[in-house]
Picture 1 (cartoon, rainbow, N blue to C red):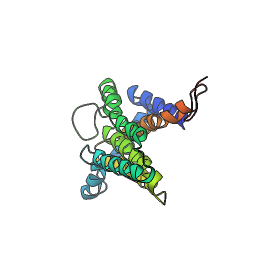
Picture 2 (cartoon, rainbow, N blue to C red):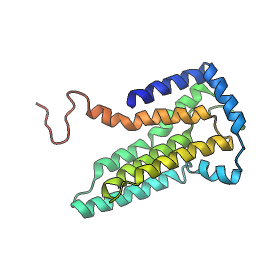
Picture 3 (cartoon, rainbow, N blue to C red):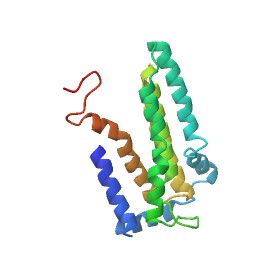
Picture 4 (cartoon, rainbow, N blue to C red):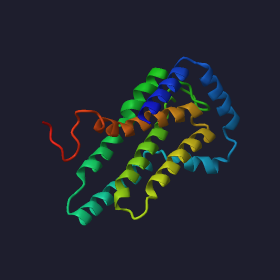
Length: 200
């Protein structure tokens, strides 16, 4: 999955930056669907990726998981909490340089810097990290499906509202899919000690 996310991100970024045929098809699709759904529906979906919404959800999940972890095990689960907190600053750190470098014009708004979508990335990181934090303390595994639905809804809302081209959203999903999968990849490398193991 990590390799697939990286490959798709490289392909999409190349096509957008080089004004390739995939970008042309993307813009035709975008123009065909923009504003087809009432703004009263799409605007709240797009707002799920706002800095006033998604990080707040992550903060609540973080506080709750720390409290539950301390209550259930007697130990505070600092490691997953720290990983979640560090994942969110990766959004502007990665997205801002790419936006400046590629300088893609927006669909309906003036200016450039629309690829990749920062709102999509914020929603993906915040909601998926929140789900990872709370899932160990839930009886049923409903948090991750809800997080995926919220992430997809954000991207769909951004496209239908006309804030982003479809590839802006897809590029963010691929990039931050790879970012979120990276810790699992690193743990699987030969020579990387697992939890409870010591290096020789």
